[in-house]
Image (cartoon, rainbow, N blue to C red):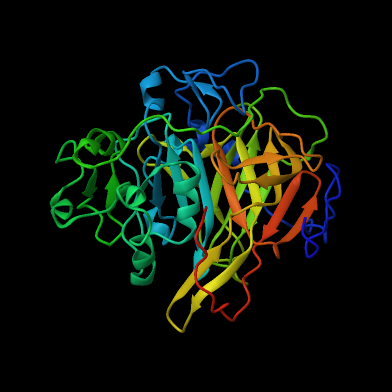
Length: 405
């Protein structure tokens, strides 16, 4: 880890600053009826490893799983912004069908998702929300189409100065799209759910987006998504890690619990604000489209520099510099592995290595990347880990957004 967290010199256990109090409460998921359905992958597990290169034509390089319809892989992924606050946006639609999801600090004490949809299609994904600087890292890393609900004028000005080939991959709402009603208008990329009486009512249809790309100059072919290594075999050297408590703020926090039967981590989100009278409270994060609990085979916590691009009385714009490499912890199979995240300078996706430089294999399946700052506080007791987000310095850097590779 960085010095403020506790440096890891090898693949051994990281230095932990303090222990979680014994009074820490977690939900009793085993007795919750609605958790009987955990999202099931439509792709086929492979009994040995693949990657980081030369994936067979029918193996998804973002999950390490064989797909039934390999034509799904003969196109670009979609990177879709998905809201997670206010709480009435939950349950979201389609999140359980993403191959990879990044969660990162947005502004004003809340976080947001950007999901990568590739090996599965979803007829309704969202609510789709606005873009941020961080998203450029993601749509470039995965050579993806970028689906978002516009952005602050300063961000949009920046986005619209990128290469035209990148701008052509932006999927945003046009005036005629606002007339499209979800569940009524067919084969439309974006629609509005009229039953939701708020601005959080725009949704994306990945099937319609892909089928309508012939109307724009986009080279929608299979991209080089090499970089990740997948193995069913549990790597050696892990530390018990069955509960992952992520605390962005009193307004937004979440918990991942390893479920032995499925071999996956189940996601629980804040049920209310963390305050002195009630403390923290959790409820399962569900997918309204599939009626499944959000689950991940891998949960990777990434420590990435954060700073303010702009901070005023009513506006926060954060830069998160996902370039080069940094510290990370991978959770899979109920174990935790200190690691480094690596972003290639040219082609290839973000991946993890040990501190000895060897590729750290992901478990085949879905990965959630939880983006935290280098000043994040880590606590650990027995099988439970706690991460409290370290906020950027109060003053903005006054430097422009750095162009990304």
